Length: 286
Image 1: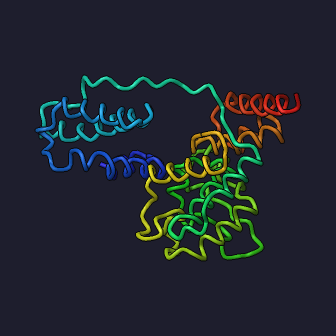
Image 2 (image 1 turned 60 degrees about the vertical axis):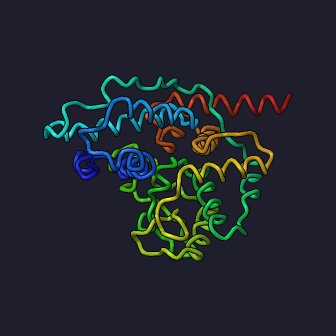
Image 3 (image 1 turned 180 degrees about the horizontal axis):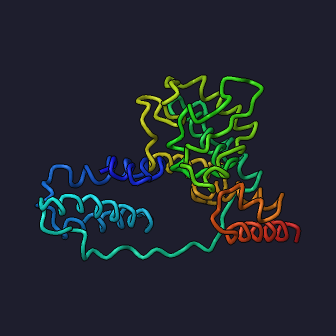
């Protein structure tokens, strides 16, 4: 299934997200059931379970969409008569209008609140949060990042850059990945590399310190929220670290340039980030 999607040109980060859905959701639920015996009621039960667990509408929609794709192939082979996902109502996704972000003081407070003395995940969490806020990379992009994608990591005086092929070959991906890793991130990645046991070029930068496998999405979010609470900072999503980068760009450069550096498809989000940071500065001044 994933091989077919890779041949269709899906980005490495997309494939990594699919693997996580398979490993943590689909296989535990349907792995022991023959494809011809999966019922629509079981798919609906999965959707209900994710809703009760508080999963976002986008997460639930992505899971159901991938599950439907899984059943398309055996249906063509006549291993099952119909796709059990047919008729299951997808969740309603409402676009976010609120642009949330952390200002400089809030970001520093969150980074200070992360317990780096915590042997398993302290340095990893600090590095991934700082990288997200300073580069605007999405969580899926960070979790798929490998050491071979970081250039200049062995040179103390060079600032790492991210290869465009990390996120695919699109023009937006190339603009978003090149020349975005700043000196604080370079220092943090250097510290992480010194502590990591997984240093081969193909190893993940942000991986489990025990197995080298991708970090568990839910556990990462729990630790991030714990750091927010310890820092006394209002609750934001991990994705809002990307907005943190965007607002810095929007505050220091024109919208067109901020859009290019952040990799936004349109200028709308860049304008909204610029307006949000202007409103916050005005409110504090008042």
